[in-house]
Image (cartoon, rainbow, N blue to C red):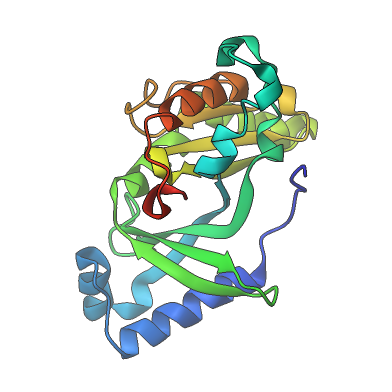
Length: 220
């Protein structure tokens, strides 16, 4: 089912803020930068650059090659639209310390619940935090966002995750999917921060998925 464009949910932002307050008042922050910033000046933390999270599951990748395709190579098979094979998990925010606002110190994920609301699911300081900022600042992304404002052909930056094969990329998604492109955030499978089209990405991710054991620990 194609993804519909949506505005930022106040519920997602509020869930992150409430979750951070609760975590700080109970067990504290396990991540060092957040822990230090909160203990030094808790009012200085701010949520920025909201973007949705799109998950590409391992079993979905493997279903791209259907039984009636026989032994055809992925490159010779017509691949589906990327937005028809991902699941929207919720929203992601980059967390900045106002006293040192050059780059984000962490990221927060607000995921959808079964009741249609949001909850804080994750706070992390991994490499994709600063990589997200770098991707957002690349010329192709800045031009895409600027052009979409000028000509009304809107695009949406999204975090695309395929965790079973350790892939993360910034997906610039248009209403016209022919214009979509993705910037891988590391060089694990493709050159980092170089534009790649969805069909090319899906073919590469499919090939990588074949090497992953199909057990419960890697099915995400």
